Image (cartoon, rainbow, N blue to C red):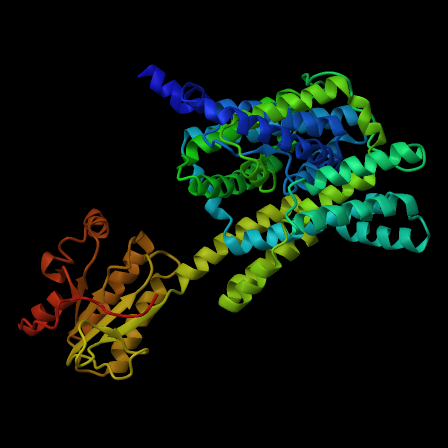
Length: 574
């Protein structure tokens, strides 16, 4: 039992024990291909986060190795992410106050805190919290993040720098820099050229990654023309392997990073869960969400302890690993080890790597987050969802990245309450020649049964909609006239009822009784009946007030048994 438990929480053991020899060559080849992306992307996202290039490589190496042991997905690639880098920058740079060493320490602390949150969430099976970010909110939020990242990289792409503390300030600084002639023509040509190479090769689905061609090509141009002293370059990497870099921290730093850590943990797992499920489905596999959460948590903790920063799954590097033939996490281990070899044997190569080329890499990656088509699809399908998406987009740009997370969550919760607050509700009637009972608003030919009203309310009953339910039934009864003796509630959609809604239900029952009308519940679910009993309403609503189907309720009221009234509510409503 102990061995099985260990293999469950350390999936790498199971992978090692069941590894097939036929996987070895594809994994090695995929690891080599993947490395060509890991290095420039890691460097680029480190710069977006306001950290030295080496931090991006450390945040790649350590999490890849940790996830190979603790992650449940066979080919998922972890690393620095465009959705997290701007949040990291906003969280740590004000606290670092220009001290690069302190910034690295704060980034490591933030990664550890994110990892602890995710690990605890996995152990407590809290993966459902990612549902707080609905699709419309995520579309708007990620579109805004992508825009922020792209704007932040435009100065580097053009060969100058901008110092501002807001997206609007960045935009103004870029326009001002261009107007003042600060653009470095050489850097711009390299940056735009690298951008074009990546885009064209990606569009043509070339076998050689566009990022590799752009980075190697721009480095070669810099060396051949001797441009390393004439334009901004990444600079040489430190010689060595990842080491702890958590000095100078205080408990006050932990407190200051709690909110950013919670936001990053939510976004990191939400993105990872989607990517993990998608690629597992392609391979006919399944992934345990709690294990995934724990695996990402351990990977963040490990990376934070050794000079890294918060990471998540990559939606751009994982497909590369898959297309290159990856069969297991050995691909990621190979990629991590090759980065270590690069840092040990050739750390000086990046002294010739133009910053403009790295900016091009980041711009293309960030552009992958933009989902304009998804937004316009929301406009066509649901204007409310489109408005929520736009609000999330504006919220991130207006109030900031971290605050934007709170805005996004509040909007998601508001959308949920809004849908449940005013759900679809209908009066049902009979259509001659058709089985069951149908929505009168959608079937004008339907007829109300003499003396009987059948209503349906498509949501749980709780404090926000109990009054609406009460008003709906009362208005329907009053509009029907004075000859109604029975109201049948088709209660199958009602999956929950709280104390506030109970009060509304009792008031409705009193109102109906005062008019000589009886309320009958049809198809009410067992757990909801249990709630009524727990609230002490067994005498108020005895068994005779409940029936298994709407048809049974009609039969009970009319004293008839009709073959065409089987209780099925045949309707085309969602």
